Image (cartoon, rainbow, N blue to C red):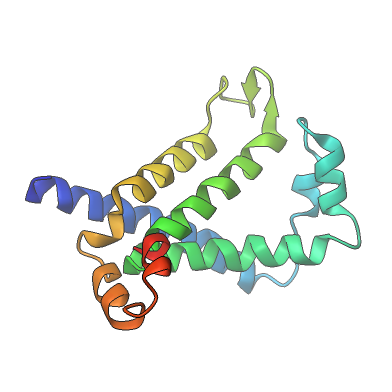
Length: 157
């Protein structure tokens, strides 16, 4: 990979990180925010999302939505644990995609593909190419903190 490709990859990783961080931190800062309305409006797999919105489940669903997205953003911005956070982020984006999918329409203005699928694909790409190695702290983190845990290095960088 050329230097310009590495720089653009790092720029895309940081931009996606900011998008995720901002989406998560605004949910954390809003005490009234809840995923319940989004989950209850699911057009695909409504039973699953109704379960997620139920009284016994909504607290952990909200926690994952708030803190998961925020920490994925931090990971992408810093370039630490990008393989793991991108993989988890891609799964989370699919969970965001399904409620708005009313096949073949994804939301009001999309046909099959919407922004969640694009985000998921980009995050899969980040995981595959180990995007944290390019202008990120992943190599340093791996060598400093995971030196004696080679199995974790595979997932973290």
